[in-house]
Image 1 (cartoon, rainbow, N blue to C red):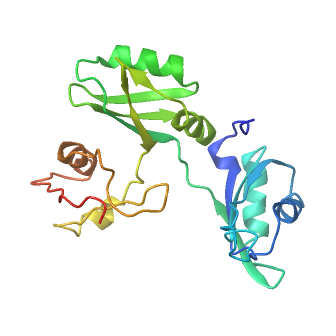
Image 2 (tube, one colour):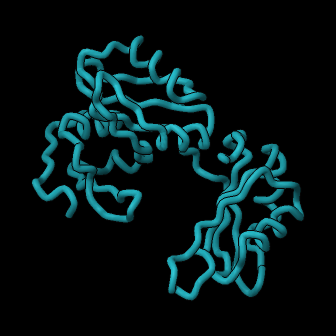
Length: 219
């Protein structure tokens, strides 16, 4: 059963947790402020001798509750660890690749709304085989990544959109090396990434003169 949707500003990130803390203990700590809608604490790999990876994501019912938790647990000492709670970064935008190039924006949006509930906007690169879509919540976007999407007999590539980089930072850069980390933790750009797609992503921060993807994308 998937977690219910909550407003972006009601979600928080909890860092600095003791590796032997359980999800139930962290939940009890956070609920000293207000009841949670849900909590997710990634477990440590088997055999590591740890209970968790040292962080968790949690959602309150309201933004006011989340703000109260952020204020209360700022540099908070818990079990000998300096625990901190901060706003959770929205992850509601997805990249879709391998799209049929004949697809119109209207057809694409209609099919996506039917297949993936919670869609709020689409940005289709018409005739170029890829698009960006946004959902009303992080959970709606995550559900979409787990939904098999097939158009014109072709399975689409679906992944979270890479975070945007500050224009102030990019303004000082003339040449940039671009990489990413996959869901499996492997470095490198996605194998199906094209130079055209990468140029479009980077052009949102300024004119791109040239893009070159090396043969060894996974390196």
